[in-house]
Amino acid sequence: MTSNEIRKKYLAFFQARGHAVIPSSPIVPVNDPTTLFTSCGMQPLIPYLLGQPHPSGKRLVNSQKSFRAADIDEVGDTSHTTFFEMLGNWSLGDYFKKEQLPWFFEFLTKELELNPKRLYVSVFDGDKRMKAWRNNLAQPLTPDVETIAIWKQIFSEVGIDARDGYPTSPEGIRIFSYPASKNWWSRSGEPEKMPPGEPGGPDSEVFHDFGEELNLHDRSAYKNKPCHPNCQCGRFMEIGNSVFMQYQKQDDGSLIELPQKNVDFGGGLERLNAVVNGTPDIFKTDSFRGIINILENLMKKKYEEDSEIDRAMRIIADHLRGSVMMMTDGVLPSNKTQGYVLRRLIRRAILYAQPLGLGTDVSKLGDLVLPVAEIYKDAYPEVSKKAAEIKIIIKEEAVRFGKSLERGLREFEKLGEDQLNELNAFNLFQSFGFPYEITEELFRERGKILDKKKFEEVYENHQRLSRATAAKLFKGGLADHSEQTTKLHTAHHLMLAALQKMIDPSIRQRGSNITGERLRMDFNYSRKLTGDELSNIELFVNEKIKANVPVTIVGMDKGVAEKIGAQMEFGQKYPDRVSVHIIGLSGDVESEKAKPSDYVSAEFCGGPHVRFTGVLGHFTIKKEESAGAGIRRIYATLE
Ligand code: SER
Image 1 (cartoon, helix red, strand yellow):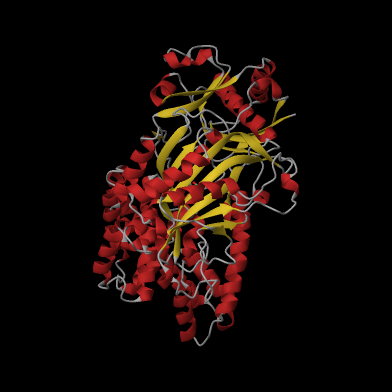
Image 2 (cartoon, protein in one colour):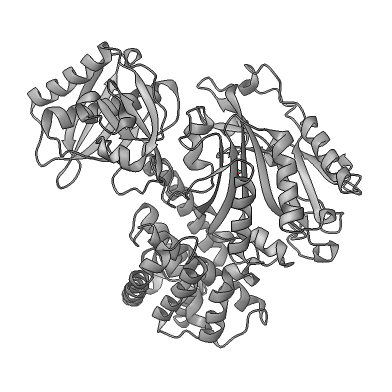
């Protein structure tokens, strides 16, 4: 079975059970600049999991292009990748555990024909710790006995007597109970780590058992002990996660139940593909085979002949595939945000390719674009359309990297004998992309033996600092979904409407950052706004607040939304059905006859909003300044 067949079967299976197929969102999130990449299928659906009606209904299914930058350093083994496709199905307050678990099991055993004896599952064991965050909860977080009972029934129907128990005595156990660290899912992990507004809940994972013979790797924490599904030895592979998303974190640190109980299921397509084809190595499946074949030819080496070369091939294959998918969605190599991650991927791929026979003509890596386009020619035809352009970008980046390495060499030659230390070795790595191994050899030629431990300390220290800076830097968009941030978000829409109506209709938003304290908006405009203009904007927004007009969410066809003049986010792609937030609606929008005069503001938006503007308070502009050529920035508050 191929990855295309698995994807098709999954979508059709859930479509037959009343789910609407929705398109994959771009890898760079729409309407959510708080995070760099779409890392799972639920991310673009958060407002709908929180209760906003989805324009396509209560049952959704898709395959989401996903990217996890945090996994870059893990790539190289047989199961980790940066880019992956996540198959997902959702119940937005519709079905729950009793439907989800048997459906997924049926999909695995009937559609993919997996042997039920090879399947193991995990469930949430409750949270026995008395933490402040659960004070407000009507029901304490007790062990998920309901899910255990459902799994027992499912397995008994295929003749398996499934016993439940704990990883500490795994013998004969099929249903494993784990604490929140393993069986609670939110984008930030366990309940106490969730920020205000974040949804989450207990989950149940399904694992495929490749057999005890695979329990051989040194990396097993349970080496020489009996294995269990969450052991990292490679024997078990997680292939699907059903999250029972029914809680939301509050501003005071407690959890409350959401108005609706949701299911958020996600399963990695590449992993399912590996399991269906009986291999624990996803790089041996058709998702990667085309790329590995070309690498074998370019490098004149076979996959699975030498473990070091295998590792390099996997890193190159993953990084190139991830880069292609990112560039398809419009990211270009740069020194900032997504562009920086892309640059790192391309350069890491080049570094691993160089010593393996690709010589100096690393631009040959561009040849790997075609197999990626080929795999996705049906699911994501946009890859083929951009393939030629992407090849050129890779080539240019390879040339730029080559020059950077040359410059680094010149800097190295300028270093005095007393400057040959780990800090400067790190600077060569950091500023010019010199890998440690090359630097070590340069240094050795000049009689200096580098201490790898010290180098790693300098590196770790730098990583810590840059992570802290990045956490601040990437906080664009909504900082959280708290009450005050939500109010400022609605005020943000009103302010954009004011700018367009009072200053210039061609003004468009170019960036935003909203915290619980203030909103910040960047927009295109060629000059500083006058004091009178700023007062007029304040007056407009405060009038609309006083009028207490409704904020309505309308699901509509994209074409209709465009016709009525709804504002789109700069450079984003939207599905055929979209959610439009309309403030002060007084006409019939669905009829396509609505005009901008029938509402105060209409924006394509998936974020949280107040229901009526009257609750916002008093709107004040605090500052207006330049934010670059042709871009102005306004800070404003609600008091
Ligand atoms: N959101 C969950 C995950 O990423 C299930 O889709 O695992």
